[in-house]
Image (spheres, rainbow, N blue to C red):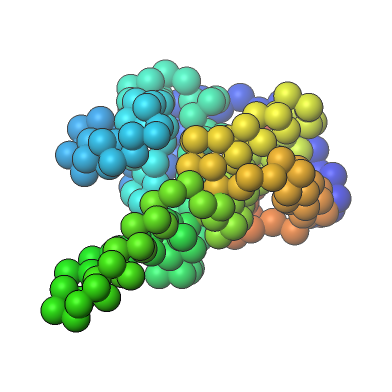
Length: 233
């Protein structure tokens, strides 16, 4: 695809959304399920006390399963749902390709708090258990470059939709991304607003130059087949 292959204005119908879900399941093993009906998601919502709207306000992808708060609402607003689903498909594709590395870097460094469990094994060695117990400090909102990079890959799907739909970029969109990356939504994963803007600009350039991820190529081909973007040149 060339630097700027603009498409016609996109109108995503329920039928298009359903087909996208079917194709994502077929080619990438993606499944979408009701988040609020999941006992695991309810438990996770309790653990994520810092994000009060996690259960009802956020779509969550674990592995290749996308947990959607309200599937009925998803189909009622297919235009809005498509862009979000595209973002989550990116996560699913990244997980299939990177697997353990994806999980470790996305959850790090907070996942290292599990080392605190070694304190139980060290009880027989005097005060050594106190050293392992310090690992619980990893639960603090420490910066996570890995999580930020994976999330920016998902965010770049929204950038791609703006390019393909000729809606352009706005300062408000940049501000919203900065707020998500530096705030409680993703547990304060990047403390620097300038770094978020730098990452965002880097991925904008990738999309504009046609340097697309596999999920973006898959989605572009899908939209092209439905006549919603221009053929790639």
